[in-house]
Image (cartoon, rainbow, N blue to C red; front, top):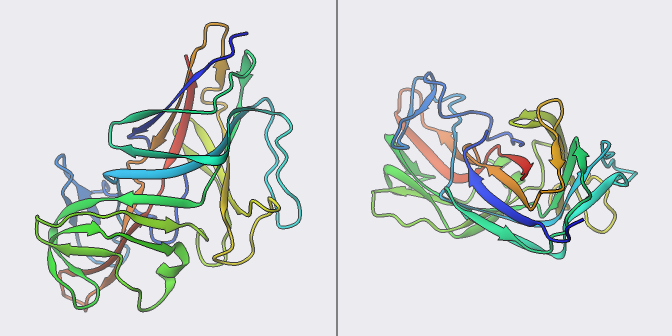
Length: 295
């Protein structure tokens, strides 16, 4: 058996989880629409006009990635996860940062080649932080919450906040809106809940199978029960019946694609009825997916 396997991470346009502010898409043509140049138009009522899109850069930290012959057992609030049927393809105790721009790829380190075979399942253990850098153009008038500048562009600011902060009534703006000259910073979102008091999600159908995700702590591997306590995200992907990962004798390359066409989402408050302005306070995380293959 060969000892080396090149693992490539790519930032591509696939279509993982969502939070309360990232349930929409920018392609329904009714509430929100994104044209071929990436310009977004919100239509009709502002209520429910959520919109998820691809950021310019996307950063995650990976600790472990593995393939499994049988389904791993998800963690609970009393029992940790069981991955005894899995073999590591990445094991980085300190984590390795994956910082990708649209259409880019990078080679991951700490890789081990698994035995030849068919693997219907996989899992990934990663930090529950997401670095998002994005600047987006709109046909609507977008205004920085609450009495800030307005224009047809919005972009991320250099800031860090918890996802649960989006549920407060008067948030600190984490995004800026204005003219074309604005420069995006990196907003780091700490995913500490999928929705109010929700710390697990899935299974969710994505390209290549189904994914579940659980917010846990590294100290005990248990699902958390309160906001601002998780420090890891444990996700299981079921590849079957779509396409299990097959490691053949000739396999030398393993690709994990991060599908991020919906990995950023605009968060805003509505203006009074009849107003065409949107009061934007963040560009946060939206749904993403992973897809794994071997060659």
